[in-house]
Image 1 (cartoon, rainbow, N blue to C red):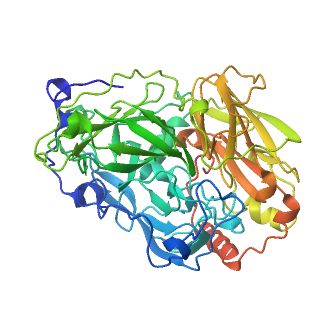
Image 2: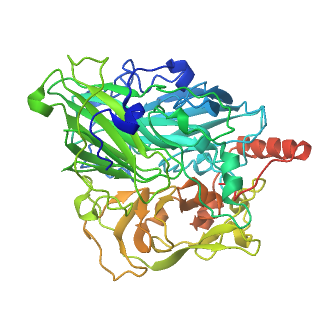
Image 3: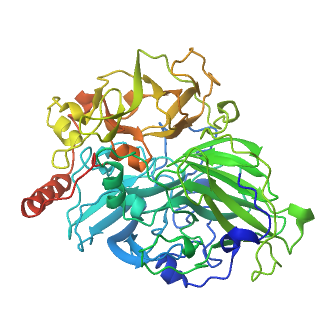
Amino acid sequence: MVAIKGMGGVLGWLFSIQASLSQDKTNGKSPLGTLNAAKLPLFMRNNPLPNGFPWGKLSADGTNYYKEWPNTGVTRKYDFTVSRGVIAPDGYERKVLLVNGAFPGPTIEANWGDWIEVTVTNNITDGPEGTALHWHGFRQQNTQWEDGVPAISQCPIAPAKTYTYRFQATLYGTTWYHSHYSSQYAGGLLGPMVIYGPAKSQPEIDLGPIMLSDWYHKQYFDLIEEILQVNGSGLVFSDNNLINGKGNFNCSTVATGDNTKCTNNAGISKFKFQTGKTHRLRLINSGAEGTQRFSIDGHTLTVIANDFVEVEPYDTKVVTLGIGQRTDVLVKANADNSNPRGAYWMRSNITSCSLSTQPLALAAVYYDLADQSKAPTSSAWNVPDPGTCVNDDLALTKPVMKLKPANVPVTRTMEIKVFRNDSGIVQWSLGGVDFRGNFNDPTLLQVNKGDLTFENDWNVQNFANNGSVRIVVSNNSPAAHPMHLHGFNMYILHEGDGLTWDGTITNPENPQRRDVQQVRAGGHMVMQFDSNENPGVWPFHCHIAWHASAGLFSQLLVQPEKVKQLRIPSAVADVCKDWSAWTQRNIPEVIDSGQ
């Protein structure tokens, strides 16, 4: 952690709480980060079943949610318009991709078992681009075409066109949505999602989503061009770090010749704790590259969930989140003998193994009677950054709903490498292939038509009809990688140093399950998933935006014969027709892998 005490010295600007900009100037129509942001309910109350809960008698520890979930009969409908707008999340004014004029975008809420319907209109017409939204962590069982990944499950939504996603919330907890078109989400196209469900550990107050994100002042296309330039380093550094889309920036550090409007003390996020009460914080790393280390001065964090999996509670001072990961924590407002006038810094620090010129993000936490016009004066926990980008020890993370992995008929090793291609451009490969997709020919639609021939650079790994698959990820590179699997929760069997696995399984009777897992530099990670539960073409990739753009992406084809039988709605083909028609009149600027 960066242990900075007080507000003096060269970093005094970072600790300012007097906002110079209004919320609409920093975040558009988003209420996140303000003291007026709504607290979340126990569940949405218009569809209760027996026992007063929408999920009836289904429970957190007694229900296998991969096989059973409620059917509430309720559809939650949202209308999203994606467009560009000019805001200044940290005081540095720039064009940002907004959802309904907001950054972060609106929070999607639903109960476990509800259907979610989101109509997305692509209004990116000033410098037109395609787009698509991915619903991170949703398994998309029986709606595989709604995963929102161009070149894999759909064509991009063309400019001025609309598509309606419809899928069921078969898991519950905290997650987010984001663009999966190139690295658009690094430009702001993202927002939180909360699916209410049963829980073994219930808070008294749910503060809702807390999005942690590195932030870049350059446009994402410019960053990709910089990363993929001939004889370039392949590296870019973020300019700042934000909590719920807000943070201060030292405008005196803007490069000479950069005349962009920049305002000091733009404003930080603020939260209110009720003295003595237990609060739930839904942490989401929604950044492009930076691994986050989150803490609150003077408070213990009780971890209760990782991604969409509730775990047996354990205490910690610091939580580490890779890109795409979520961790739900309980925090009791009992610091300094529950002093009702207490005020404390919330901190999220980009780790030393990531690339940032200003890694520390701050927000203010106020107890009931605290003076909200004054900055906290608390000190950070003395918990050194190990510099490894690893998650908590797997031995600590035991799912509440216990599952033992099946016996595995097939194991495959996929090696991560970084190299310079014949043109002198830095590329990343997974399993020996640096990925490049075809926006006009989604793999899922091709397999559905019975065609199992693929271009090599699509990196399709065909696991045929195997019931369970084990993959050893061998990270032969100097960077850590948050590896994300779509369509499943992975059993995380092992993670450690060295490129080879010795066969050890951590918690073999009930290993950690999640959809994103950190793989340390020069290390390995062993994951397993039940491939017979969800036929489809599922991306497995690094969630660092720049690594995926440079090729660190693959497609796992499972149960292809069942994929051929999927009844994919004609609306999905219509999106491809619209995209094809648009690209006949326009040349899309695709300079990366497409992801």
